[in-house]
Length: 334
Image (cartoon, rainbow, N blue to C red):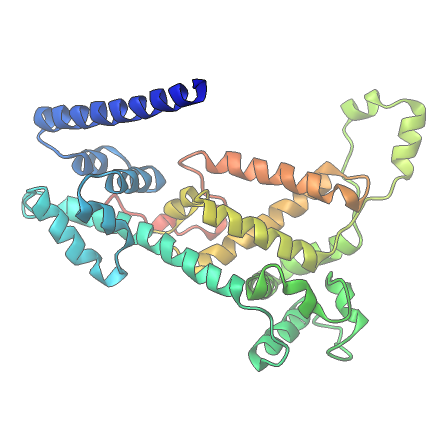
């Protein structure tokens, strides 16, 4: 009975708040002479803050046109905006900037949905050793990471040198499908120097520098043990697939909206996702060194701590995870 009453109160509060919000919107329109979409576009700077408010407003609208506008085909965005302006009785000649702002927001919103579909398609496609394109990508990965070391054969223990678990990498791609390979190859090709350095560090790890404050906390026995401890490395390729899983879940959950809406002036693409993967690989590598784990069994703990840090950063509406890849310079005051 208590559970039923609690549920009833929650339902009543939901409808009460929804009714109150609609009344507030009506009053604000009468006072300002502008609809909610106009107020957002004119009072919020471009980027994630504006786009996420527009997305919420459209999704929560009682109008079917506005609700479905967040999932239209990119080619239909212009027509959709015309329909919205007509529905809201907004003269485009008097408010030309509104149409431009809405178009920019819808391109990002629709683009994010399409990006999820593209990423999901790659994740669901298994690695096929009988597919020449898949094999070519895998061999390129070796070439980019080990340019001065020829691969002796397709099935080889050499694959362990770049962090795969056995002599045939295809078995390691099961969880993330082709998406893991796409990301690893992108990192190795587009950021070759950094990728090779991260690989080298993962094989020959260095202990992080210990501060004087930390030293003062060690007993003599603890300091001697710490001084003799070896830094723990990790399997580069396996961690890359694991970080792909992290990036994928951030995308699916919507956590990456903040980042993509700030760096992509129009629709975020697969390249934006892969650039984000590169950033996460850089940052995880640094984080791993900072954490200085006792052994590889601590990987899940370190990864979870890293995930929480990234999510916290993404809660900032002005956050862009990888400013060195950012296209935010192209964001004009729409």
